[in-house]
Length: 101
Image (cartoon, rainbow, N blue to C red; front, side):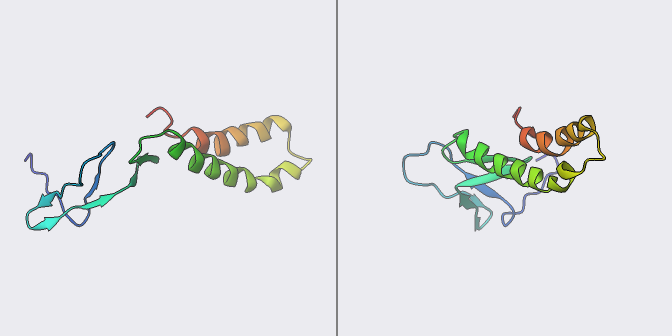
C-alpha cells in the first residue's frame, strides 16, 4: 500500500462513540492495542470526543509556562511591553497551540 509499512506494536486503536462490544483489529497475527485517549500533534483526542478533555491539560501547560516566568515578572529593569511579548510567545502560544484542529 504505497510503500507504507505499519508496525502493530506502534499502532493504537481509538474508538469514539462506540457502544457495542469492542472489536479486535488484527495486523498480521498481532492485535492492535485499544486506547481511551491519544495525543496527536499536541492535541488530546479522547474516546468521548469532548472539548473539556482537551482544554484542562492545555490550561495546566499554560499555567506551568506562566509559573516558570515569575522571575521575569518581578524584574523592574524589564519594560512591560517586553514582558507582554514574552508572555505572548511563552504562555499564550502554549495555551492556543493546536486549538484550530
